[in-house]
Amino acid sequence: MDSLTQILLGASVAELAIGRAVGRRAALYGAALGTLPDLDVLIRFGGAVEDFTYHRGFSHSLIVMTAAAPVIGWALWKLQGLASLRQWMMMVWLVLFTHALLDAATVYGTQLFWPFTEHPVSGSALFIIDPAYTIWLALGLLAVLMMSRAGNTGHRLNAAGLVLSTAYIGWAFTAKAQVTDVAARSLEAQGISYTRLLSTPAPFNTLLWRFVAMHPDGSYSEGYYSLFDGAGDVRFDRYDSEVALLDQVRGQWPVERLKWFTHGFYKVAQNSPAIVITDLRMGVEGSYVFNFKVGDILPGGTVTPANERVRTSRGAERLPLVWDRIWDRSVSLAP
Image 1 (tube, rainbow, N blue to C red):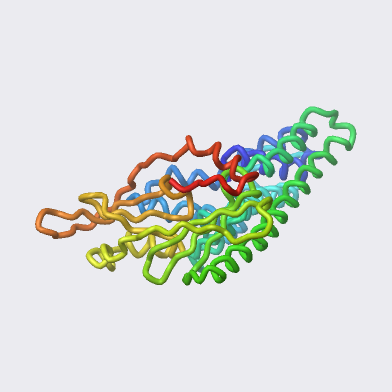
Image 2 (image 1 turned 120 degrees about the vertical axis):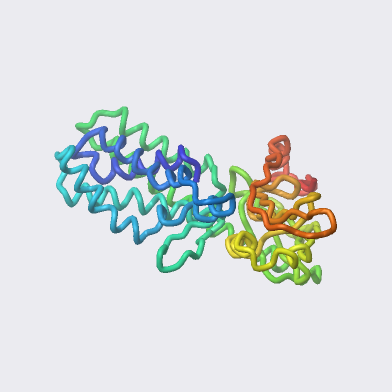
């Protein structure tokens, strides 16, 4: 999730865990700890694909967090005191754990069980920024920070904010199950064969959902479904992918790594003279966030390996269409 949400979650969890003992400083420590795992973005892992696929790796591992929590908790206890050592350790563990679990609810990929496996867990039930999740954390935390520490009302409102935000995650996964079933039935009804199907929320909400269906020949289809669409099949638009281009760079680490990290949801295109792999999970058709040059086609047809991120437009001008599409299924988000 976005940094602000993780800061609010960390502060709210810390306040719940030790706020009564250490006062408003609990939120400060929680906010800092809520940011800590994402500092791995400052590490350069050796290349564009490495930076992309090692993010949310060891720093988001539940195993690493469990090992680090007693050390960080002990340091804070020695620095601050007030709460017991056990309370400090538990607070640190809860803040770090909730950070990783929240990230795993998005589509990016979070390596929760590193180093035993690098499998990128991606629940794809929440968009990376979702105000409907964040608002409850903000209101609850604001209440406990502004109200008198002598009473219980602020603490209860903070706890209520955490309960409501967690309930929203439950809602998101429930909606995801429902819409995924609609998409699968629509593909079957339209006689469209596919090898894998992705469902993920459209930007900033869980009312409109985006689907990507990968086909046996490497092409893919994109479709949308709003919870207000009612009966009727999901309309899918089909797009080509020049997967044959990968024959010339097959076996190269960046290529195989991207195929694995995207769970197979990628497209290949020639952006002369480059061979580009695009992660289809993040963005929309025509405006994808992560694109990587994995090969350069030289004069004469020779291909040399490459490992470079390709920057493209985020398509922000199309965001108003997302809102319109929630209420009107005739609105098209196709480029």
